[in-house]
Length: 369
Image (cartoon, rainbow, N blue to C red):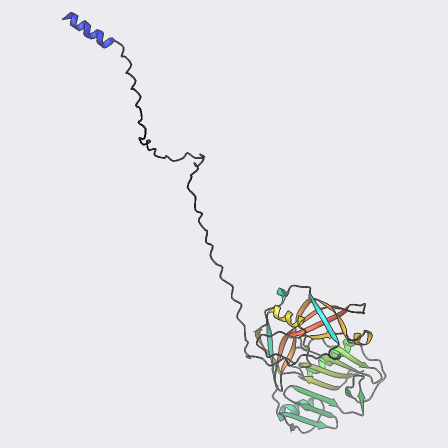
């Protein structure tokens, strides 16, 4: 028994022997290769190249929606009649210009106010009261078209829906160099007052007798007749400004001592505004290039230079002005655009300032001619 136990203990204490290495297994020709399952790449590892072609994916960007043009604003007066544009005094066909644009057309406004001229409503009572205030005692006589005439030894007053004509009693008739007939009581060789004093006196008189019903613009002395002791002062409205037409306007003949001898006032009782769209700036410029604008240039060049005149005008800016439109008592002040610049003419060394005026309102009949 002792011998068997000793032998058992000896077997447990013996070191274990290494396991035999397995014999290599030969792969027969034609047998499939082992399948390898791909694993995720570590961060920063390069992506293995593939022999398969990669089809690019087209990126589809949304098609931009075109911006519609702004709606045309037609004001409270509907479509307007053709504007009464000032006409040039120089001979037709004697001026040909090419144009260069020297400013951004985007600076032109897209809208502007149109003004309806509200006509006056006269009756015998109101006409008689105005005549007496002016020193004319007489009976108001109705005239065709809704007007009245009052006449006495002190002078006469004629009124209509849009005009007032006043003249004091006269002893002589004077004619200005421009051919305009004016009436004077007694000529005086005395030196006339300054322009500022004459304008101020004429403006006070117009306002005092209610001959103008909206604010006056800055007046100016249009002409002086020192041998007769007279001056002619003209006014336009303060708003809108400038007005290129005679309506609204006031022309006053004043003496050396500030006495009013004659006045012609074309002034409505009110100016009612309404906003209208203007034509696109590109269309206005096309009118200029095509020769459809009204050109204002110093007329002395037609005497000093050889005719016909040909040259190039560079337009450096533009601004709004207003002209009257319509006939009779249905009148409006409608905006026009005045393009300003300088022109160089062939065989003439000096640059000449030039202004070209075109109609501007979208909802307006085209001018004649």
